[in-house]
Length: 118
Image 1 (tube, rainbow, N blue to C red):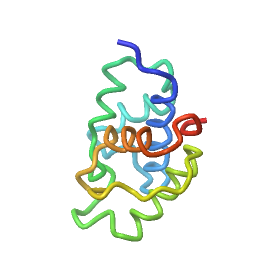
Image 2: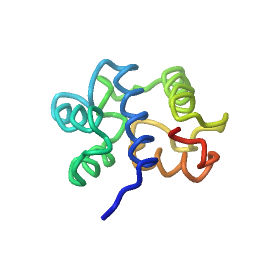
Image 3: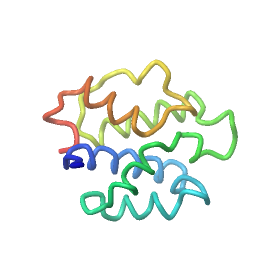
């Protein structure tokens, strides 16, 4: 299976933003997989790509009430900026249970795909 460069780049941007906002790479359990993908998204094995893709935002936060509304807005704004996407509203269900895969798909469907990930 081939995963295109744009998809890998968008996923890396999301993981980088999460690291910047929380100081973690998906918590102790997931950190080695997330860090490995972030360091080499284009060369990452499919198993590593899909592992990171399925992680939920709650993996990066210490309490179940996070991310707060303010944290979500800051996170979303920076994701858009890093991906080079125009201003679009976050997904309706954007919160602790949102997985990385959903964010990648949402950006691909709602942003100008030619700009995302550039």
